Image (tube, rainbow, N blue to C red; front, side, top):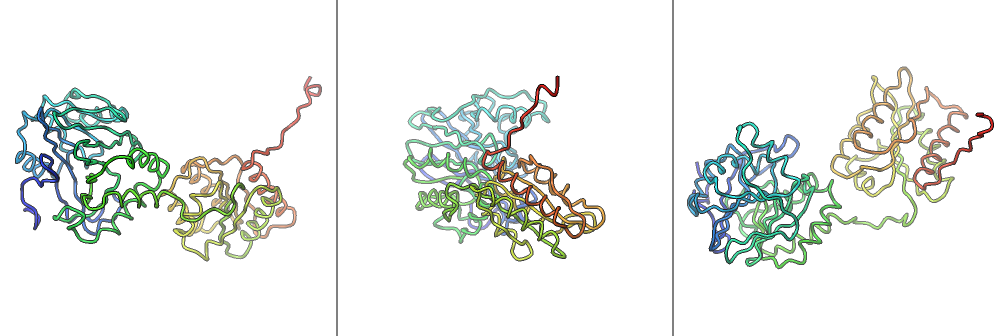
Length: 423
């Protein structure tokens, strides 16, 4: 049944350029982890030139009928010379096998990183891959009076992602970047309901972990003349499209200056049932500060929401996490904090774990496993202390902090080997 406010046919964006996507208004969860209060759209586009027609992305397989109905209202299959795949995730490529059967003469353009994905996508059908051309930044396709120019924008949010720019019309077909899960049959940002929360939420959960790649993509996109941004999900941004570039740059740029300036930064998080893990955290922090060149911040997880700390961790050089062991596990606030780190890039940061325990002491090892899974570096073994730390054990905590500081600053102690003694 058609969604109110939208015909079964294509919707014109510019003369010879149409939206031929599908709407999914009742979707409430995307890829399991994303909430979608307004559903989503699967945006596909058609561009007509003098020498042929290009289809840019397709839709989720369940919505192929909607896609083909709209596509057929503006083009014949034998006119399609070009299929552009900005991203091969199933919500964009689900109708591709059927499109290739209907337009076998079309050549497929995708990023070089997408080649293996294309083969895997078509594997269940048993069909050989179509004729395809891998492209990168500034490669182009001439449709006759209309030029599609490609921009290599990897990790926004998969390795294969790219953007496609319609030069003569100033329209950027951006893939997932600048998109959001927001379904509104009025399609255009100057007509739909208020989607700001969806735009920000989408960035935070999809693009934020790849902030450096966002900034690289903006460097390619910002110089372009833009009349509209046509993303793979959500409203088409035809009113003030450059505002959305500005907002992405704001979101990808640290909001506050780090006062540590040239110093390395170490964040020490802890939660403590009886004060023992707190004593360990304080000693560790003191040991790290003694070396110099490291700014240390100490936080009690019992006194703050984990989401508040995510911004700090994103900018820090290292973090140490302390937890007591309760029921053979680290405590819930620690797991909440670690779960929040999936939305930021922590790969390569320095990590460490510590904690007090009464019986078995599994928390430290479990935290270390999770930090490794998040791709942090853990050069030092975590520290476990049974019940109340004594003076010697607190010295060990201070030594751990000092060693973390040495790793952060590159001032590791060198070992001298007595070769004569080994002879």
